[in-house]
Length: 257
Image (tube, rainbow, N blue to C red; front, top):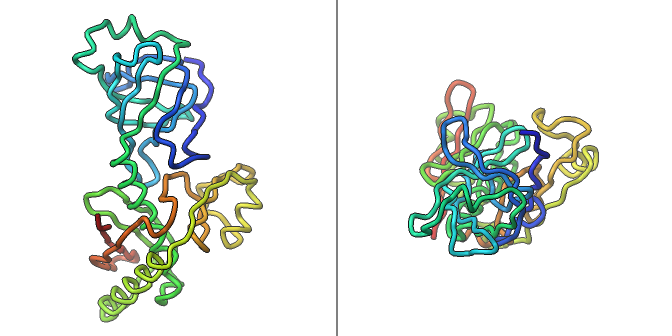
């Protein structure tokens, strides 16, 4: 298939849960699953430590015909919406899914909000590092899934300081959530994004690209994920454990309901 990269509508509006798009292809993924490819999407694909959105894609001319989105992945700039046709639609799937048709996208609101709260909470912990004496730690990977979210850093802290630092980090995070702060996102030229993010960007962001910068209150990060509209929407954050081993520190956390 010769397709243009999928336009990522959630990049510009992280809180949009319904949209319209044009169907480009109905195909089989490498693992045999049915997939829809659209010209644009509000569905966030799994990546960056964030799980995929789920929801429904319907044919605009016949909203009773629904494709249940179970997983979303991105490869070479193309977003694949994997799923199955709703059993009670009662129509031939391949007859209905024709290139060029307009489709309606509906993202599962509860799942998106939880994913956004978990993702935002991870960045909130990053923002608290300097306040609790973790300035020497360098951000690593993160896992913002509901089953055991954590943020990982390169560097360690003494074992005898783990509990005290956990308490300090908890207090710092609580203070930021209580204070709140608007969240916004913008796609910017590389140099401008670097200036806003402390003078440099992670190595995985190509120089000369146009990174997406997310501002959470007074804290700025480069990130392609979805976030809350205000820091207070995280509601509550519990630092459950800090573990340091083999040059790596992991901070485990949960968010309240």
